[in-house]
Image (cartoon, rainbow, N blue to C red):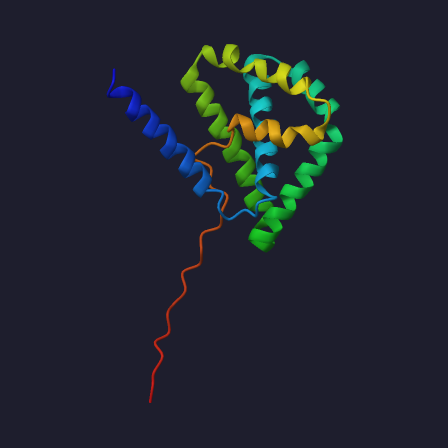
Length: 163
């Protein structure tokens, strides 16, 4: 057991570092936007998988203006990073986010609903959408498998000739 705990701690730290590395292309003010998008996606997966549609609808109604603003801001991040491919990459990101959260839910099995339904109570206790970024950041909902950073283009190095 003594060997298991350090191994689990190391694995957790590695996963957190990997998740961080996959968001390194974001500006500091953009990371909270992605975390709120991950929160919304987590709640949508929870609503769908645990028959909590009414809770999700109440969440969307309460924070509608903030969620719409966040979605527009995330779209702008994708425009900055991907240009003409922004919508395609944004769609891929949204799908990958939901798939990552669904996969985590499948790993938890029947515990998924019991463990995560508290999220609705917690988020609904927030007073305004301005509290969503701090709440989302504390939940670490961005899957480590999610990579939204564009791959750096491979550039051919031109050998310079000195004469």
